[in-house]
Image (cartoon, rainbow, N blue to C red; front, side, top):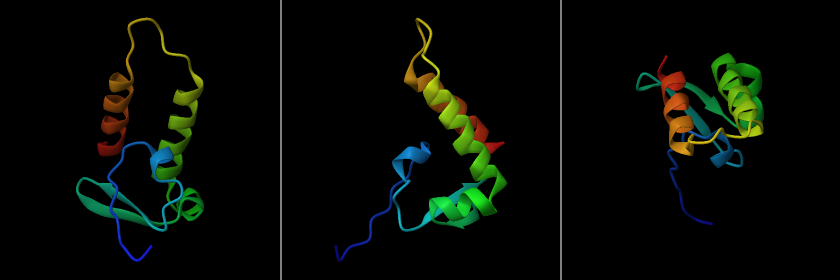
Length: 79
């Protein structure tokens, strides 16, 4: 309370409760709002959220790591 914190995250689950979420695309602000608002107003945010939900529901195969999943999400965020 009484402070401002910035969290930089690739996983939407990390920032679900944030007062403001800022989605960047190619280094520029593409959308700002709360999670529920962005699901309605930002198709790219909703797509990333859906892809992360599906990814979380899938059990990793032998040899796969969480780091590989993060790299995939990073590529999705910049495309």
